[in-house]
Length: 271
Image 1 (cartoon, rainbow, N blue to C red):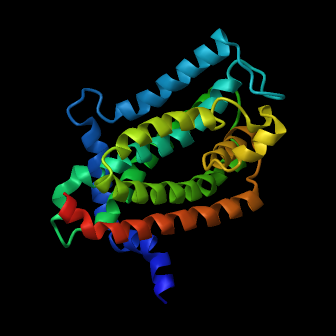
Image 2: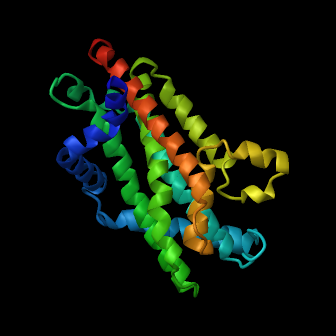
């Protein structure tokens, strides 16, 4: 029974405090743009700008091509931008994770405040920007003459397991960041390296056969490839791969949550 309780812990906390999570997420998103002239429009302007830059640099300057069937000057930009949506969700959460508890030390002193909700808030704020990026991707694809397909409806099945993995990593890094202050510098470098070691600017098929197998162990690879499949290529998800990835992601969330709950006992002493 204890194992089952721990397993449901990460998601049980979210369900019990969903109202509080919503309020904190809303404050996080709105607060980021408070005082700026454009306000929330900045969340739309950024992905539009990045997509325009990708189109110009990779499509017209470097004349990059993604591969067979996607040889136009804009196809590479669409593929890279889809990968950027996944990478952006990962990098925003992981980069902020080591300072998440340290930056909210006032919550640690409050016994009644559920600290385990902070990674959820970080994740949902990042998901808000990811959804805006998806909307921009769809609109730009339609502008290029590619009509939406039914496979686009499967994008939640791709992103939700990835979100489980990300929140698990956020829990673990948030807890360790209280004790290891250098972790923030390490994650900053690791996130940058992950951008180039993930299939963001190239398909996995472009790698040598031996490296393709190794690349599959990168937790960013599967969601990047599958998001392109359902959003751009009009393909159905890899159901078997999705099942395996979902199981691994849930385990990662469980492990991260368990680590957070065990290490949180010393937060007040350290802070």
